[in-house]
Length: 117
Image (cartoon, rainbow, N blue to C red; front, side, top):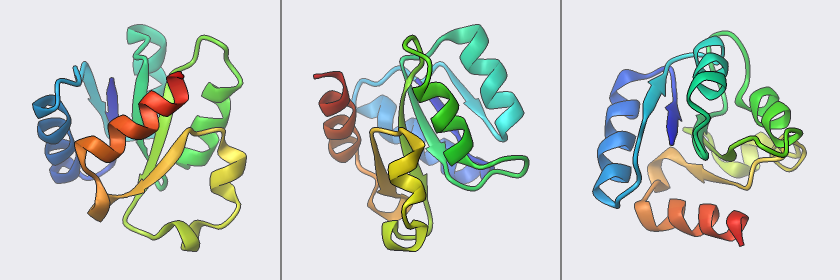
């Protein structure tokens, strides 16, 4: 899996949390360009993707990856609430959303497993 967020402290937190629950984090990216390159090169099956990145939005990346049958399952995250993000979440093609403050391994696994079912 790939963790994409422009804040190093959140990437580190998410990596530790998800690896403790047996998710294999193969890479971290801090912006959209790095995330695109990592998905092309590494072909992760899952991406935890921040909604707001310095060079693009997570919505745009999620939409592009969801159009690819071989693309990763995407879980969006943000410090903002789901209500604040409006209909962009539904249009993104992501399998779900978890606010950063609510990120747990169990919540993440439920969304990913639901998307794979």
